[in-house]
Image 1 (cartoon, helix red, strand yellow):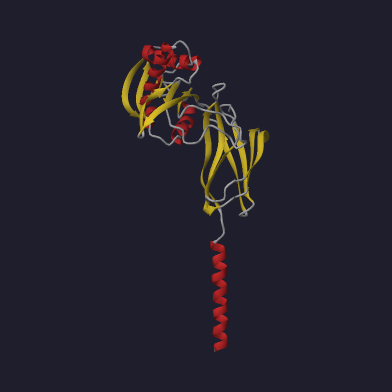
Image 2 (cartoon, rainbow, N blue to C red; image 1 turned 90 degrees about the vertical axis):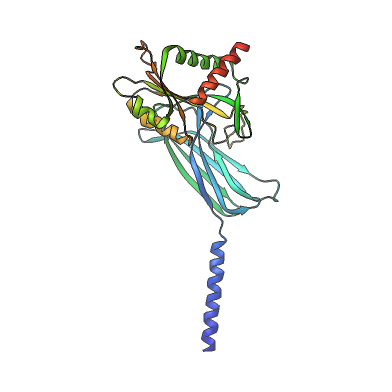
Length: 304
């Protein structure tokens, strides 16, 4: 009996040791993945990049990270490589623990309606951690154009907008939008939630093309890529203009706006009369904060 009890005790000890080993295994777990936008300050192009945000299961010291990204365009079922890079990241100090890893592909100028894929591989040799994922994104037909603007914030309250960093061309674009909305459209509703815009105010019979203007804050860092190449940006908001040429584009635009993860409330404007240009929108949703930016642009341009 004693010999049997000792055997059971030994087995129990082995089980505890095994469970302790499993519990101590470090993993990288997804927090978020997706596509982020950026306005390139050099050429004004609206660009996209794939990104992943990962959390270590516990804080780690001095990880030896290797990031690998590949971006492909997909046409006719065939993948064509557009961009790739590999970057090693080392840490000079091992005092603090790292809990989160953020990485993004290089930015590309997307083609509306085009499908893209990105493959990302992350290895931490020191902690024997591996992660890989393929991301897939089809650019909606109503892909937005954007202009980055800077909101002055005090105690989490927006105190206005500083557009001093915008080019004359960007300011002129904003003023043209303001003049068009004020001179050619009639406001028909206010305090409208974006989710009500298409269902209530846009019909296939007489309200296409349409347009959506929103001013989201930036959920992701937009100033650099994992290649180490930095682009200095001086904006923390992005004025996005989504064209909605037909009913076929509604779902894509709605999905993009929902993806900004903000609640947009604004005004609905309808074109006064019958536009002679087929690309001029018949119905426009204007996020309330957009008006402040447009007015600030007019003042800034007048002062130059």
